[in-house]
Amino acid sequence: MYATDYPRTFPANFMWGGASAASQIEGAWNIEGKGLSGAECIVGGGQHNATQDNVTLKELKAAMADQATNRYPKRHGNDFYHHYRTDIKLMAEMGFKAYRLSIAWSRIFPHGDDQVPNEQGLRFYDRVLAELRHYGIEPVVTLFHYDTPAALTVKYNGWADRRIVAAAKRYTQTVLSRYADQVKYWLTFNEINTGTTGFHATGAIDKDLTPAEQLQLRYQALHHQFVAGAIATKQLRELNPQAKMGCMVGRDQTYPASPNPADVLLAQKEDQLNLFYPDVQVRGEYPEYMNRYFADHHIHIKMAAGDQELLKKYHADYLSFSYYTSRVSNSRPLASDQKITVNMARGFNNPYLTGTPWGWLIDPRGLRVTLNEFWDRYRVPLFIVENGLGAVDQLTTNGQVHDDYRIAYLRDHLVQAKEAIKDGVDLLGYLMWSPIDLVSFSTSEMTKRYGLVYVDLDDKGQGSYRRIRKDSFYWYQNVIQTNGEKLEEEQ
Ligand code: BGP
Image (cartoon, rainbow, N blue to C red; front, side):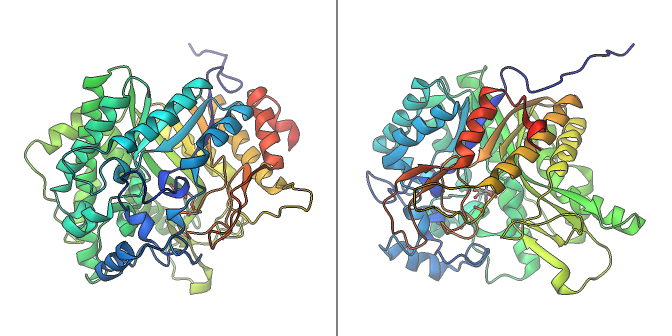
């Protein structure tokens, strides 16, 4: 006997809101006891991935010694540190139910492994959380968002060395003890599946290694992150069994280039390299298909006694993910100009889709596919914690931004999220990226804007930091007010 009814729209308690990351917004990189993160040592310049995958120890040390702010845009962000009251008020004005932020490890432990936490850093997050509480906005907190303390890269080569796990444990114990009663939704590692692509995710430097040695080092570093995530989950369960610890992956829906079984198989195998992460973090164990991959690539993961039990017992309560684009697997060699490299997607063009100005393929239906696949595979609540459009915005002479392209992008994805809810997917919420313009992670520039609120700031760090509501601000406000009822009519 099947039920004939099904959810027709977003649930009443749906978490509408937005998301951000400390290194892209906070600024205040060298005050009140903060240490440097690796992200704050990446130079600006706007070239895709030009600086994050190729850092040498020499470059890192030079950046650490350099006091410049303008050369490293993540040192100023959008200055949320001094604007958080204004920004949270703007979020409240839009009716936000939830806001995702990350805590900067290096603000709490400037060297990553200090004996005593930096109380001034903790007080900043006390103030931010109090402000969110004041407006009834649910905080969703990421523990690690691409910002391993730079000192730990020098000391341990980031996550490559097992000793970092003890430092991470002290950091997570500190923040979870302080906030476990105030924050119900936590995330361990942002887009953990980008860990094989380089420095930004693991804080490990491997420029001088061969590709094979790099893979070995990166998967080992990722194992340490899995362990640290499970430890944080254990800590949270002990501190507040009602709170939820989620994992977070960057999802690029993968399609075969054609019905050619060779393409279909390739798409499946390439997709497994991304599903590996939620397989470990939600199901609690390394999947069998990775044994073959590791053997083929001569990768040997060193595990300590008890690691497997830890992963099994302290798996994620929910699966959150970012969704910007999709990718194509093609078994035939194509000309290099047909290849695209966007975000972490390294694949081929899709003739059915158009791209953003930065070449990220726009694929709202892929979001519905992802939601259905994740729900079928994992059967844990899902949470969209990033989705948005990076674009060039024009501020008109009378201080307006007419970003109808952003409205269209967000609306089309929300329509598909609603369809997935009708399909039966358990979706906790939708957090767009990002409420207030911020520094792009991959290109370290302001020109690529994501916000519903414009920030008067350029790539050189010049500007008044004034906040200006874009057209999308009013549109999203209405979406939240109506709980997404009228989206389809807008199309
Ligand atoms: C995700 C990251 C974010 C964010 C976003 C947009 O990969 O989790 O930190 O920045 O992508 O990417 P970008 O800023 O590179 O355009």
